[in-house]
Image 1 (tube, helix red, strand yellow):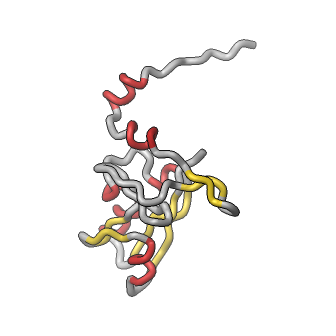
Image 2 (cartoon, one colour):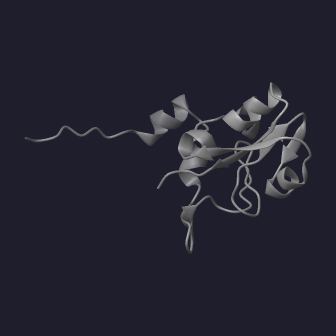
Length: 117
């Protein structure tokens, strides 16, 4: 049985989802004992990571990198997962699940997600 394949025109894709270009251009990095992980210190208008490759999380107007998350007071939680948790497709760091959870919670959430490989 022959499988049908479909070629996606990147120009059309980027016209429909302009932020997809940023995610497509991000290169995962190899870290021993962790395998592939997000690029460290990545910066753009759409997606930013800290020195460990964790995506910035917004909390009450403050940008949390991993160090600020560790130093924060009160109850904390990590949102773990792959591309969906990382926020692939989100239009900004403030639009990720962890940032949205921080809007309506007494707990400080942090994005511990990684893009899939």
